Image (cartoon, rainbow, N blue to C red; front, side):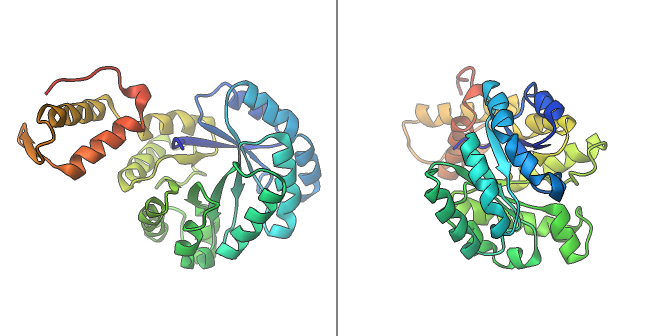
Length: 284
């Protein structure tokens, strides 16, 4: 699957914000049934999913739904999301593979085998079981829930403890074919654009594919930062062209840089995952 760079949370009951989201350059809109919806409004939120999902899909924007935990509360949400035609689910507070087994069985029972599922790990217990969670076949994407995890650990969401968890997540995700999503910035501080931009730069350098967003201003920043620059695209094109010109003779030198198999593979992957950026072939 193509990695989304921006996934924007919107309360499922807020029609104005859903309408605003439909005008943005956003990869995924997440209709939230969890934290942004008071307990008394949960049924109402489920009831408007069909209308909200249809509105966003008519704008050709993929729609995920964040459901409630624990699993006993989650089932009504999943059923409503699938009935509404959501493209994916966001499953919060995952603490074990067994929890994902229950979700997978319920999703399959509702005839939605191809629905994408993103997991949120938000507790110390979940972090302790990251390998088994990330290795579950149900997941397509994975992220750390900063605020909840920070509260559980008694640290700041931007602390090095949270950063360490996120950096450890990347190789686990890649090894299991799951897309790692995240930023080093505090999502709640959406007014600090510079901090968010720097946090996205750091996370992209770790290997994160994109980030969750809670405000439209974060979407524009994240789209720009997680996308490769034109300089990076030209570097990749040059590497691939040089390799092709050498007829695959193995390692070679170009402008003082050794080009071997790992470097070529990195260049090829960058071009393959960003076809919209490839506008020309640069000769070596």
